[in-house]
Length: 138
Image (cartoon, rainbow, N blue to C red; front, side, top):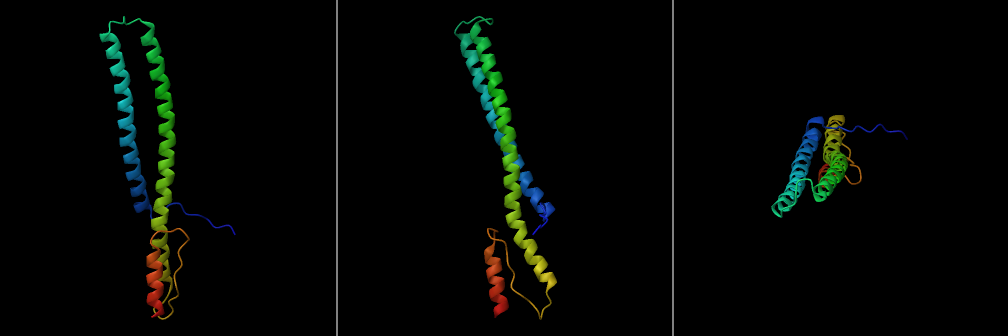
């Protein structure tokens, strides 16, 4: 069975959720980046205050470590953004999917011929499915 999977069921809602996740990710990544920058800046100031000459090997080593840390940080940030995007898409699917299915179910059935609605396993709001099905049984 080849079922086409629609990634954005409710485009406005899902993009909003993903946008909020992206904003939070950008804030956290910025905080970590500036923390790292502050750390290396602080060590440089301490070494200068201790009397090390600007051409001392320590500053070369520190610069290399900062460059390595920046590369690691950039790579881990890209991975984090991808994971956050996929997570946001997944969670928004779990919310938008049941509501989309329920709405289509209501549209497809006449008042006299209402059948139970079924959500996918793992979808959020299973109580809507349960309560609606109880309602039509009465």
